[in-house]
Amino acid sequence: MASFNKVSIPSSQARAELHDSLSLTGAEISINNLPAGTGVPFVHAHKQNEEIYAILSGSGRAEIDGETVSLAAGDWLRISPEARRQFFASEDTALSFICIQVKVHSLESYTKDDAIV
Amino acid sequence: MASFNKVSIPSSQARAELHDSLSLTGAEISINNLPAGTGVPFVHAHKQNEEIYAILSGSGRAEIDGETVSLAAGDWLRISPEARRQFFASEDTALSFICIQVKVHSLESYTKDDAIV
Image (tube, rainbow over all chains, first blue to last red; front, top):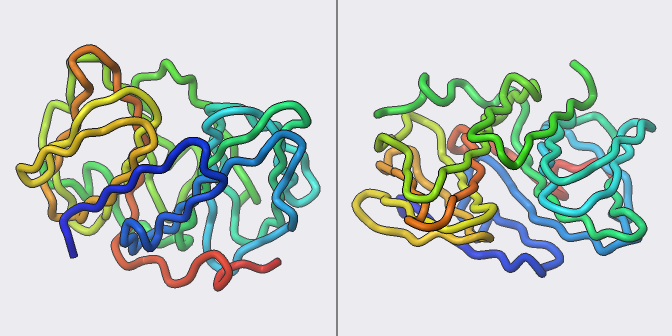
């Protein structure tokens, strides 16, 4: 495997998935742009992956297990696999966000404990 | 564990680490802002984590195993654990980026194969 891979995702792209294009082995990552007034058209949960969402720009809301969570740029969410979730852009503003899927409890060490400096 | 956690990271913050604040179990994520003309002050590699970098704004470069990679908003990189890496902002522009650490080969299934709709 190459020591690194790089892709460039235009900010206007509706959705991009990085697992295959970056040869990821520990995560799947999607970049998503929901136009104003729209939402992901289904509710979903996961079997074994936690999801981490980052709001890049715009505003909107998430419905998570029946609770409404407001979303704005700079917000980060961790959602447990079993939680039922759905994301929406605001009526007048698009919502741009990243979604990172990783297997729960898969990280064994990190930062100083995993680094070689 | 709560079904979800949320934090808000100001765009002006020099660095934020999310593992503890979001109770992550499958990743560590940092948000980083390098001022113009600066760089991470050391070269590093990893024992077992692949790193995924997303450039949020600005421009700069990465040095990866002696190769120079230019960086601009919308760029995504996967770097293998053993690759030696160092990140720099441009001389006249700050560099804002995310770094995601995950254990190599830890993702077993994703998206449709892991989802419950």
